[in-house]
Image (spheres, rainbow, N blue to C red):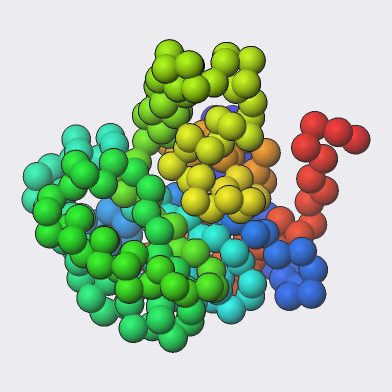
Length: 258
């Protein structure tokens, strides 16, 4: 009952218009858990894959708007290490989505000066998915605008484990001492290290009303502001993004201080 009450309050809060001001602080790194594709399709009596397809159109709209308003990094949780548990036909469709997405969207990314990066265990993806991802990264690598950072076959716990192993190997090899391991050195071993000063998240958005982090960027979200939207991802749009940023602009980030 308490959970339903909280969700109702959140929905009422979200329906209240919060003004977005382009002249106020814009979150430099926005991360989004794109949830609700399946429910969107079910509500329309369509197969789940239809929701994923429509969700890709939302990615295009949100990406362009984020770039226009000055966001430096937009990280999108596209496929988790746990998503392999889904039905084979859905997984196969999701593995084809990056191919179709980049085939149609890369020219617009070039026009917008947007650079593609990917985090996750890419070597475990099907060959055609890997090739599409690598090509998009290569084609846009000289772009100097916003970074569109896809998390593909990504898991936050696995990322932390791999970073720990990498540092342990350096200690074992005598390259560093245990005392040398600091937060900044640890961050250099994370998958997001190429994002440099922007790798920590300012605003984390999750759509569809679910209120959990789902193993997404556990380190990077340590001090991010969370925004949970009732809107299903295929219905999320430029105005919904601005609403989330407007809420962010009303908050005071203390990072543990006063």
